[in-house]
Length: 506
Image (cartoon, rainbow, N blue to C red; front, side, top):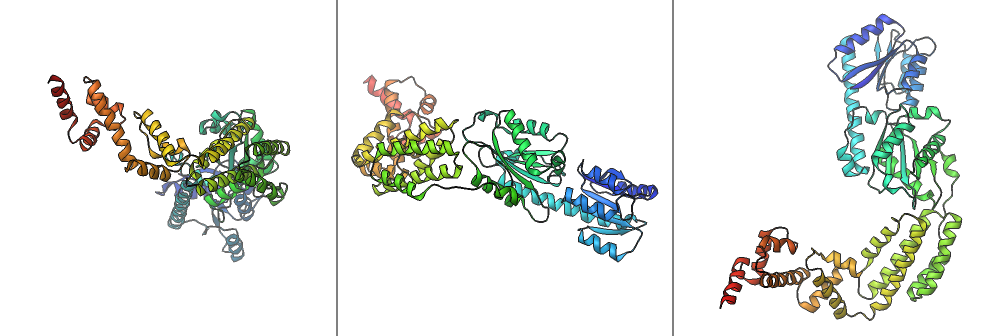
């Protein structure tokens, strides 16, 4: 249902309009009435109103002034002017204020129904568009679980992006349920919605503009929110701004705020940005890593200077901590390390970029900066060790290691990606090595190992049931196991077992 407010200083006319609205077969409900503009504006600032029907000439604040102020509070508000004056000057001003339509007194039911029908259609389209836009940026599981009331996109006048501060404790508290409870307390009676995004530990908060009534500015509101969350063990960075119904689309606004936060985010300092305020944005400056320092690290990797690299890395990490480095500088450095090692591995015949990128991503998931430092040092040391041993590691040696690992884990359901991650080489390189040595594909080679183990188990443990054997060797079901077994041996498991028994009896 859409909330309707009627503002009319004549009580008989107000009752007449309300009676007509109540008889319309439309999803409309009159939730508030007022007899002057000041009274109406106070209500609009406190509760969600979707449709405003207002007289032009009223005491204290006229209809046009009310519309102007109400539109600032609620950009999505639909307005219909009601007047007994066929005044073109009023009509012209009303059009400038984006009034939906204009009705003359006395309001006839047919004319009211036609205008209300068009407004409902437009509000429905607006909601449908908003939900489609949200689907682009919200986590799929979160989106599937949500149930949206009709008013949801219409009371959301402010978008806030909340992201977990890196290397802060309390990771287990970063859930939608915890945030919803905390934000409900912070925003008091103002409605808000918390949505988990497709980025880990990042949330969208859609709230009513009325939440700003307690603060002198958007920035003060966001800073107060950051402190409120911090007291509850949620150390985050926050960016947000008011939405414009006729300009900003949800995905565009989301990506804009997210991009600004990423650019301005620092290592240890909580960040609050009113991304719609140029003055606020000008306070923070970005920084980037010195190109000569980057070249130094690249040259040390290329020359396999492991110890020198470790010393220089310690100096860099101390500098990051002392200067409270921008987050983009740290991410750029790790990406540089990944890219440099990946190129060297590729030159030597092994593709490791994917494995390196996955491992680099895991570095940022640790709890503290100290943990990050230790993990970064250990990882780069391993990369140097692999680089140094790669020249000595022939295809046959690598296959021996793979073969030993697969045989050790023959009861697990291994994939070529698992082996790739284990030995830090690309799946395609694993496939080539196995093909060169065994003349078989990875699937054929792995299947043969498991079938040999199946035959061995049938001989050594004749009481084992086929279902148990199938599950032990990690097959999806017994029928599939039997099919693969027959393709390998030429007989079914039952026939094979019967042959074993007959051989033993002879």
